[in-house]
Length: 248
Image (cartoon, rainbow, N blue to C red; front, side):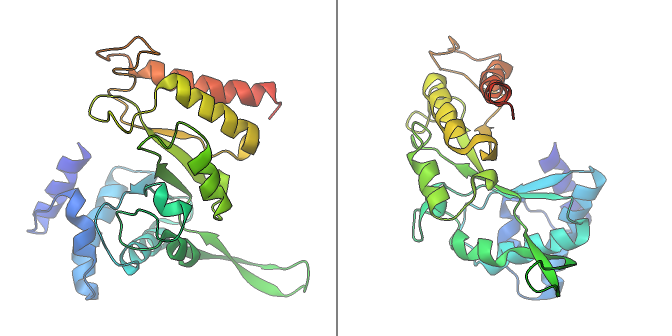
């Protein structure tokens, strides 16, 4: 639905591009060119009253492209608008890790900040402007079996990304993802271990995709799918039960 709406908005500007080619258009240095493709996106967000946008960059672009986009969105929509990104987990584990986006997420995260309100610092008593991260959290892709243990998640936290901003992104079905799929039983064990390590600071779990969640997973007895809510229920129940048990 949203893709059709975005195409419709582009038609109104006499341009027809899919959502997935938007970033390549936003690489334009000329400000007028940038506005041509940015304005329809902003209109779409406002018309549908979206509360956030997840930016998944699977093509090589310069760091300046997502930086300009997120800064403009933050400026135009305010600090309450949620901005997230979905890089490969390996792109966050170390500089030079496997990365589809073409830029360093370490450098990006350092630069992607928004100026906050001025406040007096406790050490000097002077007014200083606080800065906040533009990316509220990363829906990192722990595909390829990286969700079968805590190793990759721990590596990313050790590299400097706080667990509160790091979501364990997994494929929810073996259909089409035979090498990247983590069966539910193994996934629940990983989530349990991460909750023990990071407590309420653990960023949570995201799944791609909802409609076929659990399909082909023997742990759920779902060979053909049809009840994706069961997968979500099992994962969320583990997290909420842990919170209740530990008094969070």
